[in-house]
Length: 266
Image 1 (tube, rainbow, N blue to C red):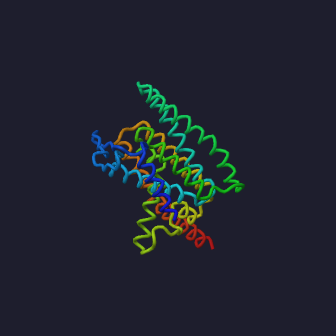
Image 2 (image 1 turned 90 degrees about the vertical axis):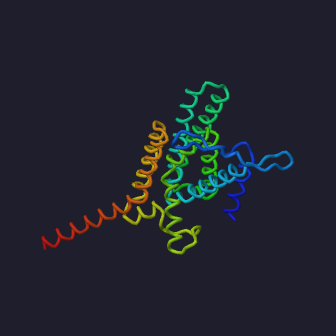
Image 3 (image 1 turned 120 degrees about the vertical axis):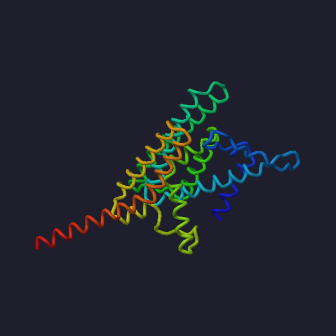
C-alpha cells in the first residue's frame, strides 16, 4: 500500500509542471525527456519524463525512509541536504541574470533554510529519544528533497551526492536481498547503520560519521563539474560498500593482536 501511495504521488507530480524534463550528460549535452508524449483532451502527458519523475520520487521516498534505522539519522542527513540546497540556491541567485531565475533561487533558499531550522531542534529531541520521526516524517522529508531537486533547475546530481550515502545504501540493500532470494521490500539488518552497529560503533559515532560525510560530499559537489560529481559518487559507493568491510577486517586484526598479546603475557 505504501509503495502504491508513493507511485501515486510521483504520478500526480509527473503530470504537472514539476517534473524531470531533461537530463544533462557528462559530455555537456542535454537529453530532452519531453520528446515523446500523448495528448488527451489537449492535455499532454510526457511519457519518459513522467516515468523518470515517478522513479525519482519513489526511490528517494524509500532511501529516506530506510535511513531511519537509528534515532536522529534521517533528520541529520536531511539537515545537511537542505543546507547544501540552501548554498546551491545562493549560488544560483548570484549567477542568474533573469528575474524568474532569481525568484526561483530565493524560493529554494527560503524553503531550504526553513527546513534546516525545523530539523535542528527535531534532530536534538529525536537523539534524546523524546520524539520519534516515523514513516510520515521520513516520507515528508523525501518529498521535499525530491521536489526541491527538480525546481532548483534539475540539480538532481547534487541531491544524489549529498544524500548519496543512503541512495547507494538503498541500491546495495536491494541487490543483496535479491541475491539472497528475499523480498527487496522486507526489512532486515543489512543497512549501513546496522552494519556499523554490528561492528560495535555507538549511535553517536554513527551519526557523526554519516552526517559529516554527507555534508563533506554535498559541499564538495557545489564546486565540481559533472565529472567531479561522478568521482564523488564513486567515493560514496566505496564508503557505503567497503568501509564496513575494511573496518571489520581492522577489528579482526586488532582482536588477533590483543589475543596474541594476552597469550604472550600469561
